[in-house]
Amino acid sequence: MTSVATLRAETTVRKPSPRRFVMCRPDYFDVTYCINPWMDPEAPVDRALALLQWETLRATYEEYGHKIDVVPGVPGLPDMVFAANGGLVVGDRAMSARFTHVQRAAEGPAYHNWFAQHGLAGLVDAKEVNEGEGDFLLVGDRMLAGMGFRSSLAAHREVAQHFSRPVLSLELVDPRFYHLDTVLLPLDDNTIAYFPPAFSAESRAVLAELFPDAIVASDADAEVLGLNGVSDGLNVFLSDKAVALSEALRARGYNPIGIDMSELLKAGGSVKCCTLEIHE
Image 1 (cartoon, one colour):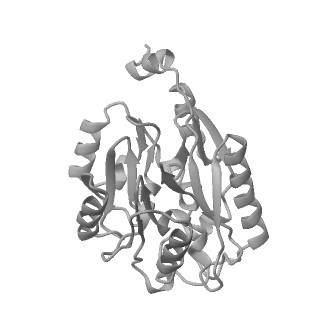
Image 2: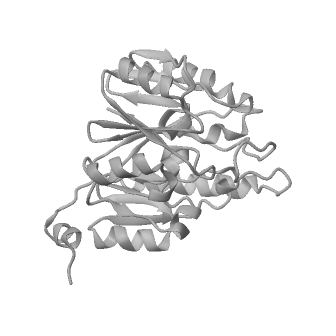
Image 3: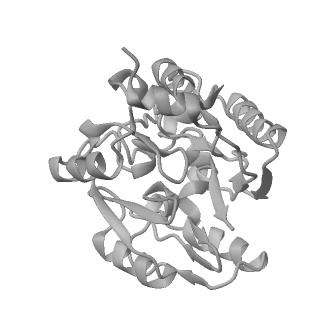
């Protein structure tokens, strides 16, 4: 029996739109502390491999027509490669992040300075704890926001005011998935993929009502951060380990593009974590 979602995919012509991304080379990437369940300072990190994986992601974006701006890394900030956490840029407004943990605190000013040097309009620094696109994701005109581990409810109000748009708060409950971008992937203006068990019952109900055609990810795909991906409306860049999710995307008319991010996963990041979108 053919599902409604499959029928819609067969009649929908998906089109990519060019995007502008900010990335930071992992020149100083390492795991020297533990601030999430993925990190083990005792496990060796192959920085050369991390650089190769990052360069492959960057080259793949460019191959598909997307523009990349590169922020220089800063010695002593091994997680700065995870550019998505550096802030939010939407239209004529920008906000740099304010991190939860002291180990990453200096990343906020580093990204703020880069934003300022590159003329991003309406730039402010967050006053509340706010880890950028890690917890704030645009789906069309709707801003979805995570809470429970990193970004605060007060940050949701601050973002709503600065960007002049409503923010929908969603509660995260699984410590492995401490940022919204680890369990929810915007695919286009109306569609998401997500992992329901990572959310509170109330937030699951909200998402089910708003996105009845959402793609639901499996445990296996969530555990390799398969939802930590980026979509341009057609092409979906995600971990090459997210096999079932890639098949589900293909069945719905998207073009999944698998990228090996295994070395960066040692710090709890994958494709999206390495990618801050400038929503122009």
